[in-house]
Amino acid sequence: MADKILMKGNEAIGEAAIKSGCRYFFGYPITPQNELPAYMARRLPNEDGVFCQAESEIGAINMVYGASASGARVMTSSSSPGISLKQEGISYMAGSELPGVIVNITRGGPGLGGIQPAQSDYFQAVKGGGHGDYRTLVLAPQSVQEAVDLTMEAFDLADKYRNPVLILGDGMIGQMMEPVEFKRDISPEDLPDKEWATVGNKGRKPNIINSLSLQAEKLEELNVRMQKKYQQMKEEEVRFETIKTEDAEYVIVAFGSMARIAMGAVEKAREEGIKVGLIRPISLFPFPDEVIGMVAEQARFMLTLEMNCGQMVEDVRLAVNGRCPVYFYGRSGGVVPTTGEIYEQLMEQVRGEKE
Amino acid sequence: MIKEIIIAGFGGQGVMLMGQILAGAGMLENKEVSWLPSYGPEMRGGTANCHVIVSSERISSPFVGEPDVVVAMNLPSMDKFTPQLKKGGLLIINSSLIDSEPQRQDIRVIKIPANELAAEVGSDRAANMVALGAVVEKLKFVEVDSIISSLKDNLPERHHRLIPLNEEAIKRGMDAARE
Image (cartoon, rainbow over all chains, first blue to last red):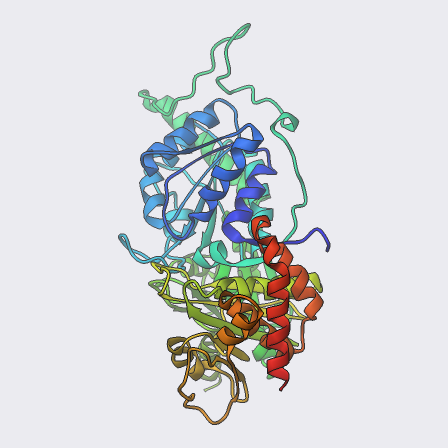
């Protein structure tokens, strides 16, 4: 416990990246994630790294592309409108099979929106985001410690699949302080070489990193290979937490900050003797379909809670596949519901069920 | 045991630091803690607040809807957060800057002339530490020694010469809350 320090989510993500061997960060300022680039600007020069504030989000993501192509672990971060700007580059990275970690400290949208916490970028995050048939692996932390752990994992997963990985947080995760510990500290020298990287071709054929492929059959081959990767992610990378689902009659599904708020409502309902459980998807892509489908067999209903107008609920319905009713409650625009409000919503559905 | 606290004032009064020191003290005692700031286009003289939770169990939402304790360092903060207090909750008022009465009868109120007491120990800028002392005294959930250690952790090195003054301010706040 002595190793725990109190850190802001944004800064803790930065430290986790450095302790994962990331020495390159390219970004552009936007609230509520500014502490992350500021932290990297302070730390990276002391670690023989490079921090660059690009002229725009588009500049930043293309710098990420370049650093990644040369084999380095690299990160960028932004918040919703900035992440939209990066989508072209993320699609190019996916198409060029380049790893990289992208952090979205989500704020309310659409448009320039507001600066308070939201989960309204779920669709963009899990369905591809940019053009073309690609997916990013998406990890959604609910605490500062989990933001650290998932950032560390994100770098490994990005390298494993040669694919961008997205950390989907929100203003609450980014701004809050909680005790954290860093369970590993690796330097870039500890990492294996990437034989596909463009690091000089002495003694071998040149490596070419490119997402342009004018021959339809060749491009289809790439797509087939990428789909195999996504299939493998579905088999190996699904992450979730279940709380009190064993005997649950009513089941909440929520991720990130919303899952924490829901947790308080679950505890309160249990004190009243109401059998409520919680499924918390941690990987949003790949989505934990299987466990949701299984728990749906025993549930009288599922209640999906989100800080948006109803996005993940579509994936929950696909996973439940008609086994039980799926309801939705959300707040949007940056409004964070209280535990009491969530409890009331839950009880309303429970009462409706009993009538 | 779980204690949920909102600390509010105007920008520059050090309300964020108060919360960080309190959360850090809880952490040093191996308690679960969270600190959530208000954030936005705010500036010196604008309003600022933070939500702090110190708990013996895992914290669900870090967002405090119904605080056990509200610390109001100025009048707009008292007006904004008094209605949210739990029934029987504690309102700590900085009476140096607030001369009106809260509108609720079902809460406990203590008035601390934080700026005056801070001036007595050397600087009225330590008013936040006086108020923090009052919180520690009334909360009875974190030890003052942890608060002092956390103060050292949270103050940048260049301000460490101010630690004795801040310690004194915290103790004044504790004494004032005890009376």
